[in-house]
Image (tube, rainbow over all chains, first blue to last red):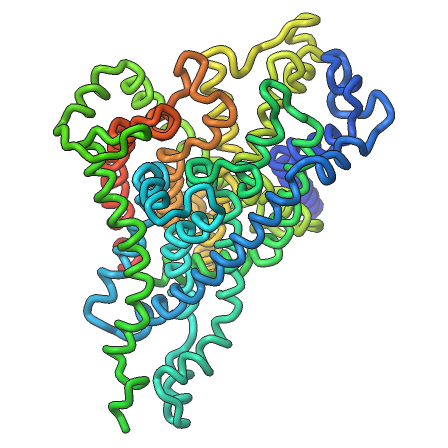
Length: 283
Length: 297
């Protein structure tokens, strides 16, 4: 009995040690960024100083500089509104498509679902050159709108795939009951199915927004003016003047962007995992 | 009554699908065809008029040793990253599904590398790997592995630069792999494992004869997704090394960008980028096979 108790306690300790090590390995750079953001120059630019603690009093100057003297807020605003519009376009297009593929039982829905999935395999690095010509042709070069136009090509395939998973998790009886109650097929979809799939929609919104905020190649290739850039290209290209990096401000920007996204994502992690499971495994 | 528009499943299916299909055809299929057309042309930023030049871009690309170097680097980068991401992702997934206090905080911290825009986290790493101020070097000096004032020049030496780029990439993608594999772990029906336990199967036997085979298809999907992601990614390379030193970390995607956008030679850039495609196609076929197997199961 005692032996079992010892074993259980050591297994518990093992779990905690593993969890703490994993958390530190993943988040370590961010914790360090947080300290660095508040460092004085004389503290930071001395290779003999301990980089993980304040060797001189902390200063908020560089963080204030980020928010008042750089275009950081403009970048953040651009990322936000591009993200919101892209998510809206994605939902409007992907939700009906996913429903058609998951429920309306056409003979071609299987192959088409696979085809949409495969679009994910034609990545930005293959398309950015020709798309940049397309963007020029439409007259959207150097405009944030070019990103609104192009990003749904990344988010629609993944979202259709995830939403199909959530839709398959809803019993068919519910639509059939709604249709018996006098709704049309379309009405049943809007009134009965969409409310039930709402958790899935939220997960897709978060996922699509995360993908949009992280995208780098298109933003770098299409948009050059500072005031049109999103965070992902604005921060690494505009907070650097020649060879001079505004290091503390850069670290502050990383933390300021990282924390809210990870926070929201974590809220929906379980739903997201559930969506993956239903979509791919119980296909 | 039964043939109201809103009730005709066939027509409705078309109406529901058409917008997505059109969007993707217009902005993925057409640009893809254009990319092929550009690869066979002399289009450049300075002279956007289209002239067909046949395989000349490909000849010039093949004559360039940097291309072959990038191709090799791409394989090294993808291969090593993938193995590490899958193994570490599985370990991380096991930790994340375990029960412990403070799980919410741990999950939040673990998700950070993946949810943060890659260009921003890479910038943080740029300083962590700095040639003079690198905190990693400071730790090594602190423990006496490096002499006073000595530095490793993480991004300045070919081997170390590749190691750094791979490490940052693995750090960033492992949480995503873990999330996908969590889905696989959660999906294993509980009763199978309980039954095995009742039948007297020990931990390792359950691990190797039940858990691993059941998770394998999902792990394979995670691996292939990750491989595609890695194969076509240039953000980490771009921010950390810009392909240097001496193209030691140049990959196909970054080389295509350098040629096509910065060098303005659209034709050659497109020809380089097209090289990604046959390999992606192979990955696609592999994914489909795995997915089909899962559906049978």
